[in-house]
Length: 54
Image 1 (spheres, rainbow, N blue to C red):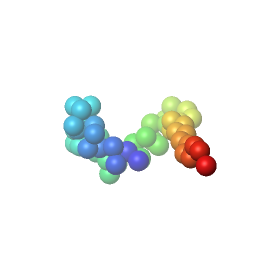
Image 2: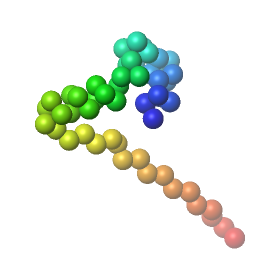
Image 3: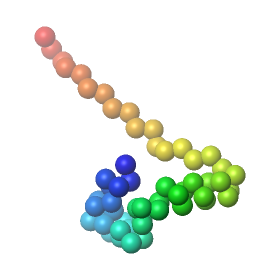
């Protein structure tokens, strides 16, 4: 998911591709989580679709 958001990060000036270093991001997040003896949860995203009427 982060890979698909990278163009938006750059477009809105949040981070550059070099700063994110997407190819090592998962490893770095895992290493930091283990080092902190923490639990990491991604945001819960919920969507719904419905048709109204007959």
